[in-house]
Length: 502
Ligand code: HEM
Ligand SMILES: *[C@@H]1O[C@H](CO)[C@@H](O)[C@H](O)[C@H]1NC(C)=O
Image 1 (cartoon, rainbow, N blue to C red):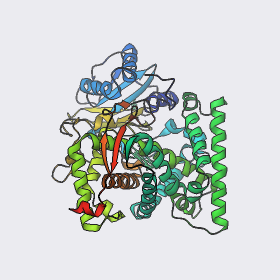
Image 2 (cartoon, protein in one colour; image 1 turned 135 degrees about the horizontal axis):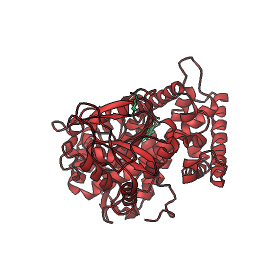
Image 3 (cartoon, helix red, strand yellow; image 1 turned 90 degrees about the vertical axis):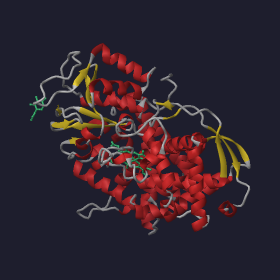
């Protein structure tokens, strides 16, 4: 493991610990007492793992054992509620649906991202996330939900498909590619088109994305995460990149308004959004909202679609079944891909969902507690989680609990199909790849459409094989991605596609 060479910060892991520094968690017994305490009548305090034990844990997480195995070990030992303390920082893990409800649906005044997202203020600008009060933030989340709801996503299918066709037209008759790199390229083009709009896609593509890379590279450096406002060279580069993006979007917004031009992209929706009191969004807010949505969409989409590809190609029985589903749909509706045909791809849908169960792009979610609350475990124990604490929902553990997911290490898309529906076994918060409750991902429908457009096109037009071995997880990336290249060989299907029907 080479931390120096990983240009993206050890985001998911570091954030857990950094968040605790920022929020200055000061709670818990400073002892190495690992046994759950108290009698059964009163709520317990979670077991706290401290001192040398926690230092070893952290090391193992980062090096030999990996994040999942290390946390799973603690879960087996202490049950679904435990605290890891490291240099006085403490994070309480809430594992499994029984103890997750309040995490996801607690009132904003009782549970929120708190200062965990402070580093995003200089990245996204003054108009959004932590820079605004929670009422405004709630309204801005509504803008996202409105801009990405299924009726709007429907309009993105044709442009997505056009990008996909143009992109794969550049592939030869056969060859070998690094699927990861290919999907990175393709998804940036789709984001440019559907989220940012025509101006960026056609004229300012390189300018916007080099500034965006500069913004995230520097904004996610450890110093920027820990001290977002310190005048370090890194922070200055981050701020210059933000200023470049801001001026580009300000210009686009002004030009659309002055020429009364209306587009169908997400940018337009954010420009047209109005607060409850009738106030329209400002240029600063639109810039912040668009940077933040790109930030939320970019790495998650790339890693998601790469994992889905790796899983499909690794499990050829699933690949065959997914192809068969495509053939049935082609038979019924012809070769065109529409919103409604995408909705019919239920097996592909479950393949995607299953890949995201095993490889959630956001493997741990964090919140800050503003008001004490208690949780009850499956075994009936109550724990009190006090105010001021940082809590973590480790999806990468939640998604592998054997009493919920049968043989969790087996890739089995059928576990979600009618009759089994394992994602409902523990209620609403059993499956969390897109979060849930108050801060559920507003991009879920869009993300599924995007991946389905890409994979239905690939399945119909290419024979694909995974050449490299099944990738390991690189936990040090912003969204844990397949390590190294994902080499895939392709061969264009020679038969005209309507012959696939037979
Ligand atoms: C497979 C792809 C994706 C996954 C797995 C995913 C997952 C998530 C999760 C887990 C959260 C909640 C984080 C938390 O609880 O703290 C989230 C938030 C968010 N996602 Fe996604 N996401 C994906 C794609 C997208 C896309 C494509 C978009 C936009 C087009 C998007 C927009 C957002 C936004 C704006 C938020 C923040 C919502 C808020 O502040 O409440 N996501 N996403
Ligand atoms: C919250 O929890 C802490 C620690 O367990 C306790 O000391 C405090 O009295 C509790 N506060 C309330 C309002 O119950």
